[in-house]
Length: 271
Ligand code: UTP
Image (cartoon, rainbow, N blue to C red; front, top):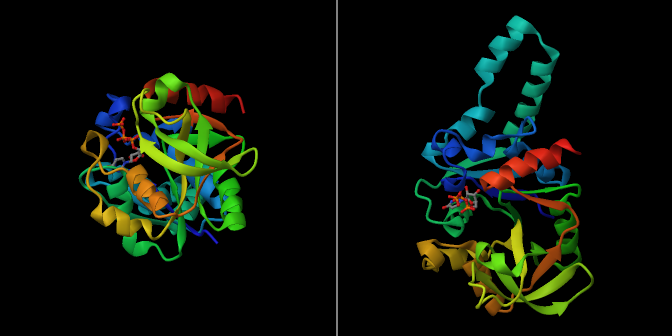
């Protein structure tokens, strides 16, 4: 069973400047609700019991958002507003399942994941990148089903425009399992159009084995000088660990860029 999830939140969010010069992008509202709450709701619905947030000192406002009890209690005592009571109950529910760990230098997603090593108990865990919202169908839930069926690692995937491959982790297919699931032969972080083995991209949902930590400890920086989770995954694939790419059915919204962030509000408002 997959019961634990990791969410890296320690990045700088430069694509959303100037907003991110003072604000954590994961708390920016998308149709009136912080992006991170969509991710937490996806986790809860998928059966996740505890979530590890990797934050930095600069993003302490994420912790403050969930740990503001005195403030809520005072307001509720004064106003007894049912909406505020409801919101506070929701925050309490999230708070109970979150643990915070720190990555004070943004050395890459792989380094962020490594920071949570001590807290991972089971053989496999879920990782979600909060910039990637997937709506209309719970992607984590579908991936957990695939994991149970094949007892393997799973990554969310979708076909992207060939011209944009350098924005993603791109994989080479080894074998088709069925219409939506594929065995992966190789995965390359942000390849050039020339070097990309396909137009099949990995999206921010991963079911990873605990053994990935032993790869991350030894891993050297890759593209752009960062320690990427993709490179550790490639090392595991090369040692014959099974990784399945799952073409999810929901709709993907990229909230990490300004254009994508604005578009995601419009898309969610339509639901
Ligand atoms: P990105 O590289 O897409 O986002 O990381 P970023 O660095 O925050 O934003 P830009 O590219 O400067 O606009 C994907 C996720 O991984 C986290 C980020 O917070 C984001 O949620 N991350 C990234 C870390 O936690 N640590 C890192 O060192 C890098």
